[in-house]
Image 1 (cartoon, rainbow, N blue to C red):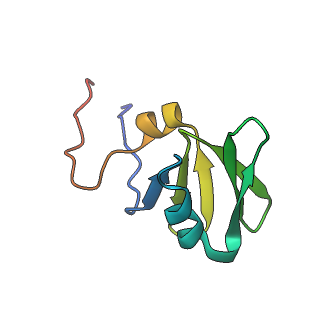
Image 2 (image 1 turned 120 degrees about the horizontal axis):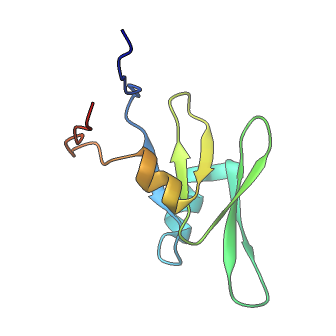
Length: 94
């Protein structure tokens, strides 16, 4: 019989990129990240992980995963995939 399952993941840390969180993020990333400021006034955060460099633009999220690696996630995907640790997981229909 086919059943539905949800992935069980350990809690993770995440910060949404914004002008207000830029310095908090850079402090959190340490040597694994830096900001790139563009001539038009925009910026993005470059994140190093063992495989490659990733870029997070304003509105994206930077996630510190289960094994301590940093990743980036677009806001729409983040909303679909994650809930705050203190939120109740909504039930879905069967």
